[in-house]
Length: 322
Image (cartoon, rainbow, N blue to C red; front, top):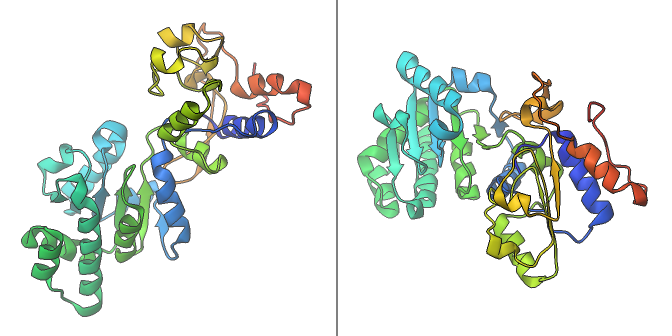
């Protein structure tokens, strides 16, 4: 699940390597970012945007985002920039939002048009920066876009001195970063939903999608399942999926399927954890334990370390675990 600290992600990785080396580790949320992260690693001259960049931006390229639902603070900052600095807003894909009530230019309303729109926009912006003009009508016709909207969007982004691209899950990686490269400064931010998703994906290389996990289970009828930091329902599993299988649940939340698990271990809720996490801008932040409730849970690091003791496991344990 996404609510993991860096320490928990490392403990899960070490436990899997020691005790279940052939296990398929799937991410409930975030696997759709893996192609984007891999593509970003191959690009030179691009920079992961900070929160300061978001606040100081004078243009925003929203690629498959849903900030209203997932990052409302970012919506507030972008609205403020649009209101006070006339910051340009260009959207390709994603959900309609409060931002669409302003002067947002929506280039692509259909998912199948997103890649074409991104590549065409990148080409137009590059042409404007290099030559001062472009064949907007020809480019728009080839991509099935509105020529007027595309020209306006390209000119606004090319003229911006501190533009930022915000990228949501599942967007075409190559086309998205072609668009980022065309922007002055090459600033981008991947909009993970869960607080611990970035940490999980950065620590556990090769984390698979839920679909890959289901396929692995289909091929191995006797394989068991361990749900870590999530419930079976949150991971999209039903009673039929788990019929006849042994499974364990390590979560701070309960659910009907969790109660039927062979092993059920309550975890500390997010507000009672201590450790570190990675923010959207890539910085490692400290989590301080908040007011303690009456819940009695364990820390995942301690649970995995105890489970691996017979094998002499060097599983890292959080010093504040209980």
